[in-house]
Length: 550
Image (cartoon, helix red, strand yellow):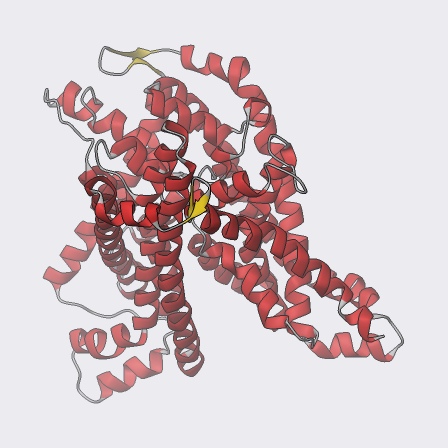
């Protein structure tokens, strides 16, 4: 029956309308509300008042700086790891991926511990006091954190470059430098541009780092949080998020175009194994030194979080103590359990729903298929602060009264991770032989039976790895859920963020160790699964998309 074909798509479409479109429209409507009337007063204030105008321009400049610097770093590490035979390449690749388990606000904690006014390096070792609270520190931490994204994206493109194309250039007399400049770099240009745009998006949406390290410097995301939590100016908070949304949607459109171009390029050249490029010694030394410096900073951050959790008092007493870990059973146990429960539910729901939607958009022909694909992917471009404010506005009254419940937290986390589930499902279904499904249908099996007996078993590695990635991401998330939680459903990441914001470095470090342990267990599980030959190629693709989506 024709109506049966549209039953499931209609249900999914309604869910996406309620949890994606409705909150977004609520923010836009609220930004236009001035008292009892509709007007552009908030937007006029945002662009004319020096406080907000400088916030907009500051956000754009820092995001552009973080995008350029992290892309350059990611390119350097990728070239060193995959195009040279320099020592410590494995160490560099591990350091480049390690920030995946270190949330940005935990990096700020380590930065304060090492370089703050009473920092271990600045105050204890060098005897200087350095005011770190400025846009420069925000730029530094964002560059360090987002290099993982650029490294994974550029590496994925670089591994698809056909070595025969580079060999052809050599046979025509090109030097190794000319091969890299005229062949390798142009072929990976879509990946470089895509990484640049994606980091710009991530930087614009980051609110924790500017809020903690920015001092008087604000970004659109952190300013919207301050307007809502500090002065409870919902209208201006919505306006700043609406401006942020517009910028992110424009950049996301460019990113989608670049991704489409990059896919065509990789299909033309994808084969063979990467081949090393014999660069001149000064260039090799420069690449190796940059990678060593970056890797040292990453491991220093990880170690400093560990040290901070066992340090009695930052700047006054650096002696060993276990006192900070008392907060775990006293205040953190409920948050730990909530984190595990929410992350587990999110990972299960996201992976299953993502595969179902992927099956619909790739296997079934119906009107509105592209619209469902678009709405499912849209949260990828929505800043976390916008989703948080939108959920407050949308679900604080009838007919969807969810504020203060665990359901609103699950809704936020699932919708935030759903683009990953969709893209992972599309990727794995694209690799499956459809003749198996056709054979099942020819034997009289229904489409539902074929999905559960054929598609899901074949997609099991994808489901498990997607679920684990969603688990890790939910453990680390703070941007959206900080707006919708209450004391009864508080999670570990919010406890860590609030402790850092209060200046309780030791307590924050102790809770961070628990959070890093949970994230590390998820990453280790992903690594164990990825060692199976059938899953290696798929996991590599999902790894890149996961880093892009978070």
